[in-house]
Image 1 (cartoon, rainbow, N blue to C red):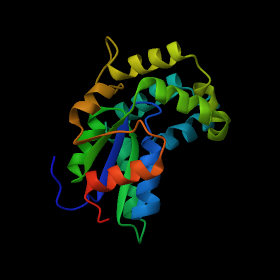
Image 2: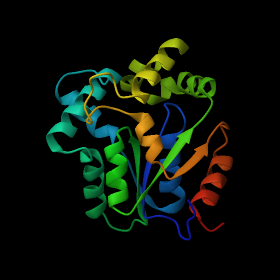
Image 3: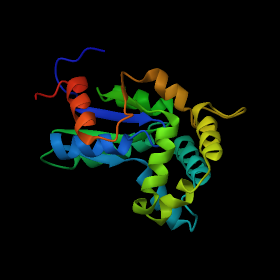
Length: 202
């Protein structure tokens, strides 16, 4: 996909530990985007329900909301925040996990970036950052590599018998517009690659 100008609305998807939130924070800090992690709304609701923010609970809740409010409910919530904010150059949202969310981003005139990295690098990143991510995130971060990969496999493909409200990371990837590989732990390199990919002026 060739861009002539940076997009106003960006959906960020990708594998666990690839750096999706880091991409969002770079867009916020260096390019004045409002950055929203759409899974924060899920964590808050689980907290209100007295449930731990484990991945299985987040999968169940997100599917529940999509069935009740539409496939793009999490994107719509982020867009509503942006519409009521002032002074931002654009909106960046992570983490898209359902193809319908990519469709809604496209419907708003935005694009979707898929962020990926080598699986071992991603696993070690998560282990390294576990202490700084808070107790809520450590529930899922303290896993073996085999469990990490099993979780990823369960989220990449829609489960047998699952409806269109369930997770399908492969479906999001198929609808992504731009792709970035983030095997380096250097923010300088990632920022440079984003500038080039999204046509930000140096």
